[in-house]
Length: 231
Image 1: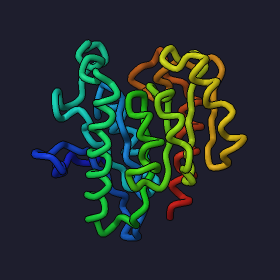
Image 2: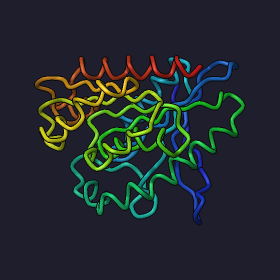
Image 3: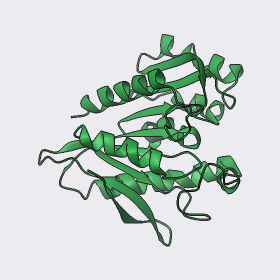
């Protein structure tokens, strides 16, 4: 079943849209909060949220771009890239939105109090920042960008974190992948999976040139497994 868009009060003035889909069960369930790519909460993100809800988990996808250019944008719209700049301050501002989304979920009777942050592209860093300091119990990143700036944030994180890339990702060049490859050897809670020959955007069916079924299925299986561990 499709979800609905709700309004979440921001800790600063205003409110932002959040796509929310609840599972058809009365039992309390964990949640996954989807931090989108620069295209926003588009059909791909909503479809992923719907899949999680169909599997019995609460799924929320906040609009992280509500301050300047809200709503989803088509892939060919050049404003999608522009609205994420400057990148680091925008990601920092979005930490409040991820925290506010989690606070909203805590008002739902169907939420068991545990949530994973799952980031795509622009949203990738929240897979680390979520469990690091925003109250999330786990993190999953799929073709995350700007991740080299957040590798040291993994220090001290004990929650499960899974990071997935393709080795042909043009925004995750070899120095980024090489920085993450050794982490699982010293941090057993962190998993890093790099698919050979896979491009940036492998989770997005709306981008058929980049979509990769194997990488998509692996990421969803890992995410669902992590969520099961939060029940």
